[in-house]
Length: 352
Image 1 (cartoon, rainbow, N blue to C red):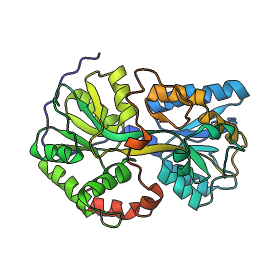
Image 2 (image 1 turned 120 degrees about the vertical axis):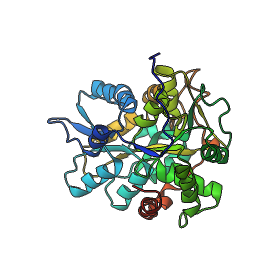
Image 3 (image 1 turned 180 degrees about the horizontal axis):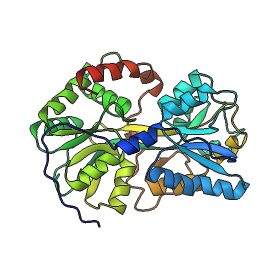
Image 4 (image 1 turned 45 degrees about the horizontal axis):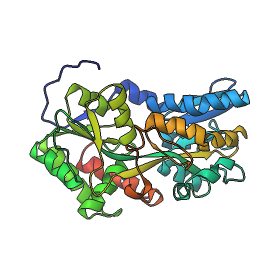
């Protein structure tokens, strides 16, 4: 385990931003010259597992080359929309919100088990998120990651977490409005708990302002920031994905643990879709993404729940992964209509 020196805590809200990383994520990588297929992926350990479990087996089976593009899901959609006749992306793995926008703009091909045979093995409760245009690769819950050394009694409920931050029981990390999980993972969760609605997120914003004003919270906008902050001792606890937290526990920091506070954590599916007018190879790649073998490799590496019901989990991973029945499932199509208003309200009340 790497030895780190705990940094003095600063009792003021901060925004953790890795400038170079953020710029890299916002820049859309062009397709590699000569690549037969261009697909998207999230960065970090996610990308490494994606290449190992899906891209490399696909290239070996087909003899075709695959370019992996990193970036922002909404920018991927806009890039395809800018040239729908000759799209620069063939297959997107992105967020439910971005998928919904792509469907509305008629940028995707419909798919079914007829075109993608391995879809027949997927959990139908998850497939419905694709509305006939795609399916979740995996999903994870957005709960609480914490230091077992500094948080001896982690909060059992979300209200206990909020009240604990305000009381100064611990320094916390929460996502800012630019983070992909914020609209569903934070705003809709707090709305459910504190009595808000998609058209009235004031109850959620009020709790976020209380935490901000306590000076015991740090806002983050990219996934590596809370890992670094908790490793360095700048924060004790953070809202975070289960799989990434357990991966950090296993590979870099055994002090880290993860908990699902009552009444539950919001589930985030990673949606896989085929871009209209993209390479026909995209259908074959989707079948690779839906395969039990590929998903078993990916799910056990990332410790996320696979959509393929035939996946067998490692003994260490199985008790850690989310279950459909215990996760909170939000209507991503519904909240997508309100996100621009939410961003405006956040920026006015919480800050940029």
